Length: 256
Image 1 (tube, rainbow, N blue to C red):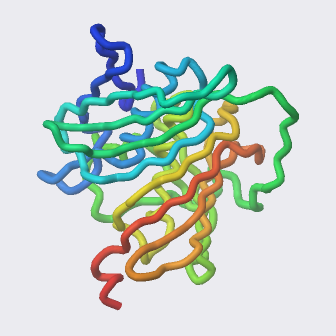
Image 2: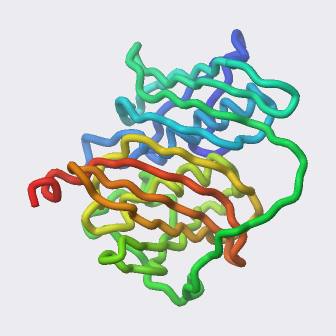
Image 3: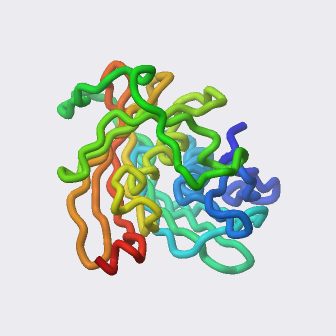
């Protein structure tokens, strides 16, 4: 079971719980909080269980943050759908406070698969430099669960790419891809340490791959906010997911 997997409530099939473990959290000592991508991953997994279908699309709004060791309640409401698609609303709360809300569609129809976007030419993971955060000293938090390597650094173009893999060799899933997509703000020096406001996340495939390539193209910075799009690929260039995010720039960047 992954560290973001919610526990089902035996009395209600649409309700789940998650305790914020150290592996689910980021932030300085004494101020650890659940990473937004982890909250989205837990909501996605709960939605997939209720709908009994794989995630197609979801969008989450990060309203508040859950804290280390806090118990989070997850409720999935089925709004509608048919044989092919199930539409749901997922609400995450802690101590009566709404943390996140997520809308999602699950399922799909059989049809031809065509990929139009291509993975950029980058070095193999073993040939790329290790990405480290100089002020990161926690060997149990979410950052420590992943190995990251820098593939592209072009901040003047708003472009960044990073190879990432889970140290525990977790299988590729919608939940895992939601977490890795939430590293978007960290791929540009001006948005690093920013605050995610949302994440619209679409799953193209969950093909097996050891390393995931996260390619982020920032669209721009405006009114203290960053906007960008991330494509994730397998090592051989097959598309895994597409996501777009809005995030607040760090206060030091807002003052520039």
